[in-house]
Image (tube, rainbow, N blue to C red):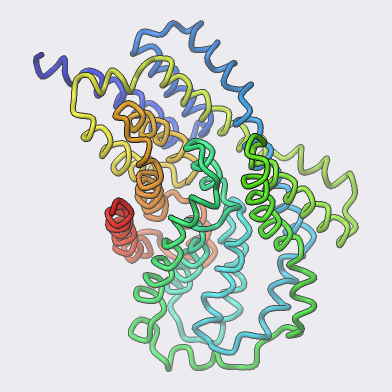
Length: 429
């Protein structure tokens, strides 16, 4: 077999990814971009357009798709309810009284906002960082980096992030199992944030000493629990019900426990703030909600088209499966993450390929380590992305040139990816 023939399946996949990434880069819409990539993949591997459409329609009837769509929509509704009602800010005020260390206060509010997934959420915590640091003679670039980095420290270990939920759904593993293996990423992100953005060598003591002034907030734990109750219900209830279902009703989808907890959490915040049906109608009419749903649709279509077109088998037949596996678990997640700036994008675009290669090679027992590897590499790409919406909005808020801030983000992001590679080898034993 000549070189061109052996490379042809890979060139076809690269062409499909190029079309997808071009669409993301030129902002024609993430859902449309992934659908375009799936159509290109189908045509390049000899699948007729009618067959592509049929596979896509069948994908939308899958139980996994319907459950995932319900979870993502519920998370977005909960986030919007807490933000619109002002409950998120009241929660911040309730907790601020407990924070006396100025360095802790600089990192705490972005990290707390990070517990509530929302598009562009860093711009929500940016005013809080500005308030905490307003009497500190810090550079605005330092404020940008602190807000941006600590806003995202939870993304590899928090069960409410759509990227984590999608990864668990595609790999068909409980999300609790996944975050028990990726959760070390939270520690890695925190340590890197301290080393590169918060330690005394970066922010000298005389620069932040004014941050030891009396904190604001009522400092009452009852108030903090009251305002945080919807999050507590969603997180603790979701994980608890998921575990109960998995242990006692293995035939029932564990995602139902997460959905039930999220619905109760939404009901809680609506009752606490007197939000009525008009609020639900407004949320259900938001473009961002349906845009995210369109992305989930496109991801499941892409996944099923890849299987129906026998893409993985074609690649495995002409080349060593290990090479394909490394590409799909390391380079492609990082690349898609860097170009899209969105976790859901790298998970949906690359994990079906990676999981398909694992199945073809008979390595199903290695699903968790490879999903962890792909998650670390893809998330590092998302964090280094110059078009990450949180990065763009934070730079805009503090009026900082993006290139100046990006140069200081690049190194910790590369170390994050390398830590994922090291953790992968540990998990493999």
